[in-house]
Image (cartoon, rainbow, N blue to C red; front, side, top):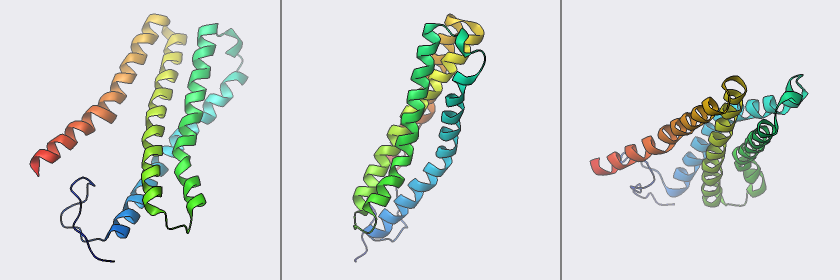
Length: 168
């Protein structure tokens, strides 16, 4: 396999001298490392949410709070599934020489899973603040949590990417 210059859109450094397969392997390893970091947190969140109905105070929740709880659990389960999906996909495609599809699909699952995780955390914040402060305080806290995720996970990286492209 011949060496190819790095593509300016793939985030590789100009000094890297790797062929396409090596680049895909590196991207896959980096993706798995990122997923290892987030999976523990999302699985903990999901596990804790699944225990809530068994707490003595759960029957005291009103209909809105129960609905919000179900939204939070559903989002957390979806985030868990999305963030673990690349591993299942790897098993399904193992030894099929499908690394490009694996990296591309894994990236899509990771981005979707992180977005869903952010929404799950916002729902949990909303529910907790609703229980402690009431509806108005909860809505404000949820909006601030959403804004925090939007800035840290979307706006910040987008601006950094734009700046990096201008510097090239």
